[in-house]
Image (cartoon, rainbow over all chains, first blue to last red; front, side):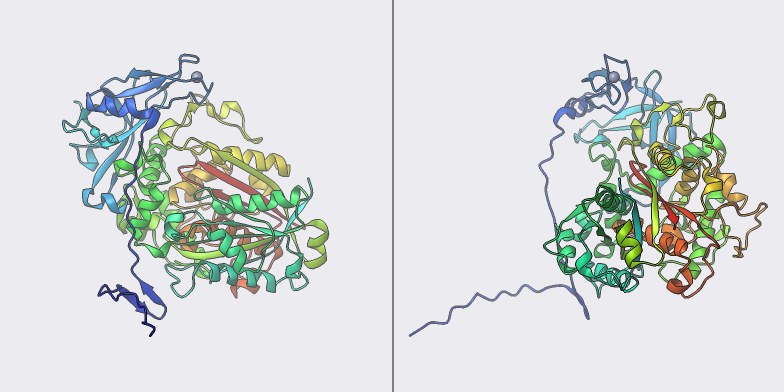
Length: 160
Length: 427
Ligand SMILES: [Zn+2]
């Protein structure tokens, strides 16, 4: 006697938005094993309250956001410590953002310029309202005590 | 290099969502539209395709390009996917151009699409933000409107550009789109409407930004023999140029201007370039395309431009990169009325005469920006302008530029990370 083979039924349903056409909810989630690789010393620096840039010993170009090879001569760069204070090169206040950041709005983004450094550094600016932010304003780096090993471990506030 | 021609184009209506069609069907519709206007072209004459879409996150279907190839009935011919952020469509056209110019193919389909309605708008913004450095930029809450806001805040600081000048771009492009049936978001707006709409990232409001879209666009390119055999009015691809820049705008140099033939070093004394206020990739692409096409004065030698206005600010910055005015003059260029269409009442006081229509179709701001389709959309609209067939495709002649002989399309990615400029000429 042959026995009928069946897949066991479950009680899980599908979230349905529409039937013409059929539109269902399709969940997707992912954890990445993300390596900072050659940029790791920068993130270690943040945990020690140090902002590291990189400099080309060949042509002398200094990068505020580190890159391990010079964009001009292609040589490997060396780490150096950036000053704690810089100036606002440009800024914005975000009232929206990617979904992950909506709960933090409004927040300020700035590009910081440092004396004697050729490129800029992007960060958050706190402790100031939109209508008070000015290009050229002095800002100082501050660091999270409980490091998250993320770029947000450093942020800036007006220094005067 | 062989001469390459655009012989036909097709486009779906761009919309917030097209849930009744997947990407394959959208491309199919645009493809069938294109084929229907070159009846002498047998599908068997097509040698292959380039398919472009930007984000695997939106599609959640890898190798979607291969599925398009299949759905168009082009297997087992050659095909590949091209991707380059916002410039995906423009790069797709150039890849198709290269296949014909090299002699590898005689007829090729350039097809692009995006289905952005598959996630909510702010998740979509998050996906797009992943096209910035995910170690240094994205985790700050970085997203594209924020990046462009910072770039234009610096432009305002350097040159005195104003949010009201940016709003003029929005009014122009939305108003043009009222006469384009393929456009997603035509509107009759005032400067006040633009400034009073919701602030996204200061100074950019919702009406300073393009929206997310579903849509597809297709162009068919051919060599000279085939083009004139199957098409009464093919359009020549006269020049191509492509530029790149550092992914992180923080890394952009502060050096010397790359000069166009109509500019002198003296024009830019003590000027730091490109910084974050200008697009070096855009300038590089334009210079290369002008040299290729033999253009020495773009304002005199071009009849219209379709450029990548993902933001009103980037349209102003791009006038300058393309040499329509000098660096720093983009705000006054639009405020004076130079990039407007002559025969449309915009409800604005425009003190000077229109000089060159920019985004007569409505651009990305009003036509929509289904990323992989956008650069191809620009090629389709420009093909129709140069063929003089806007009336036939749009159902109205209102946007047809009289005696248009030469047009430029400009496709732009990231914060100016890839830019593709292509110059098209009537035959
Ligand atoms: Zn170097």
